[in-house]
Length: 264
Ligand SMILES: C[S@@+](CC[C@H](N)C(=O)[O-])C[C@H]1O[C@@H](n2cnc3c(N)ncnc32)[C@H](O)[C@@H]1O
Image 1: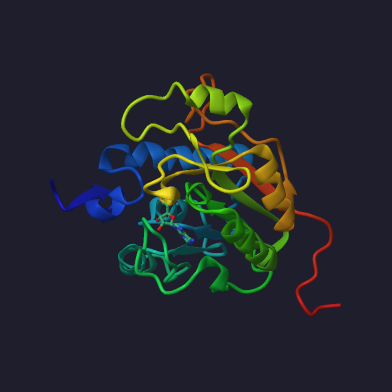
Image 2 (image 1 turned 180 degrees about the vertical axis):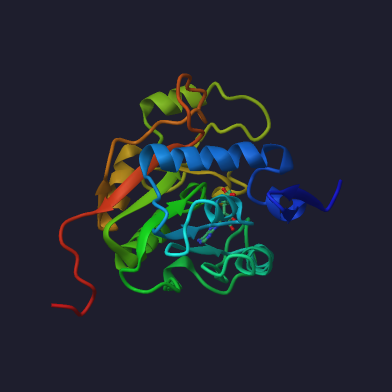
């Protein structure tokens, strides 16, 4: 197995790509698929300031270097130190308006020696500086308290008109019934309850895949100070046909008037 694969002039380490849930064979299709999803549901304009949580080894960042102008900017955050180091040395050096930040957050599958909890994190991003926040396959590894904490942080950093694009596993009656037909090693069936309105796929690795019922999702979104900007776009992860996206997609907008803490 080679150590690197070539993509858009970058030599991407195969081990770090594999930690994103897909290797070199699927890299291009998934990358382009993400850009199509933004264009369809939550357009990113060339002057936008974009924050990506769980940026991995730069899948979306590399695509966005072609899309964002110099007046735009990008911050990628992840909890895998070598991925952030790779992105900084390879992407930021060519595109100074692209910045990457490591958070030493503990995670059973992504950073088992991490020293912080998600709820300790203050994102290294200024108040009201961001137009779009993107999370591809990240809330699908997180639990309620941590998601709500990130949503509070998102409210702090979003500008007026800002949106959050997040892929999720929405476990409604239809998707749960369909998922039970998913077969084979690692198939997404979500048979294991894990707290209120939450199900996991594999009790050995609770963070491996996490889904929420519509009540659970609504509770988190509301507690975080957001509402759905559009109905959730259903994905084909459960075996659904006639849809374009793999995971379900939620686009969120802040609710009501928001004041920063301490502001009158
Ligand atoms: C399935 S991978 C997807 C990576 C990337 N979005 C992509 O599509 O290539 C999930 C990513 O989220 C990161 N992650 C998990 N929990 C996180 C957290 N609490 N904060 C930031 N990143 C997190 C992981 O380290 C991993 O890189």
